[in-house]
Amino acid sequence: MRLVPLALLLITAPAAGQDAPSKGPPPAPQVIDPLVSSVDGLAISALPPQRLPAKGCAAFLWTRTPSMALVAMATTDPASLRLTIDGKAVDLPISAQNGIGGLGYSQITEYKGSGATATLQATVKTDASAPKSGSIADATLRIDRTGQASVIIPVAGAIGCA
Image (cartoon, rainbow, N blue to C red):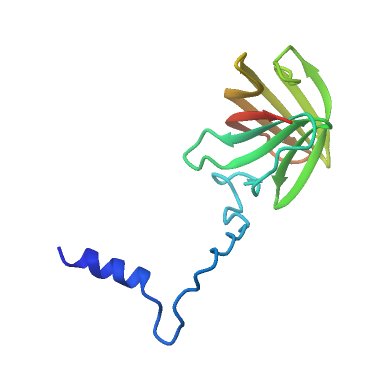
């Protein structure tokens, strides 16, 4: 079919009136804020890309829904949960924990602040051959806010440690 070579030519050829591309390195990609203002119709938004903290561990949590959006990051030092509620990123400090989970996490961890309580119930899996990482195959994140309906989000994630 003759359309494929034409499509490739259109992609690689400079637009009329523009100079040919320079031979220098390509520009660094831009970090673009997520277009998702609400994940699956809930009052929680996707987080922009997050970095591993300088110390401790971080659990990066994605929804187990078709959107597979990054919705939370739980850190161990300081122990807090970062998420975006109603378009605002908040860090909720740990308020309670129960059970042993591994890599500094508990099976059930509660975070409170900014008029919200978030409860993460997770099973952490580790591998002796990779001591600074782990995974969370199946977990739930419950968000309770004063005067609002509770939200329970199925999540899964990866853990990395500095």
